[in-house]
Image (cartoon, rainbow, N blue to C red; front, side, top):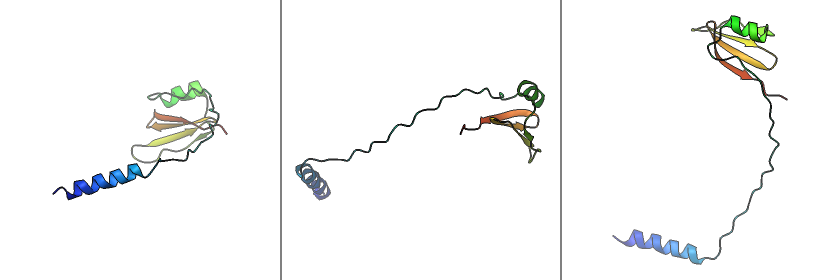
Length: 95
């Protein structure tokens, strides 16, 4: 009944008495954090509002699927519409 407990205790005591424990330290150099600011179309804006505020996109892809999802590509971001309303906008990472 107490044998598993005694075995665990014995192993623990042996590992403690084995000497000091050491570990390697991995240093990862910090990369400079890029900061930039960009205004994106907000969720719920209509296609007309987006075009009025941000101009004509470089590319307008046709709607696909049900519900219809349309994408507009601008130089710095992409806008996703469901029907005619913005559901998401993402910026393109600067290179």
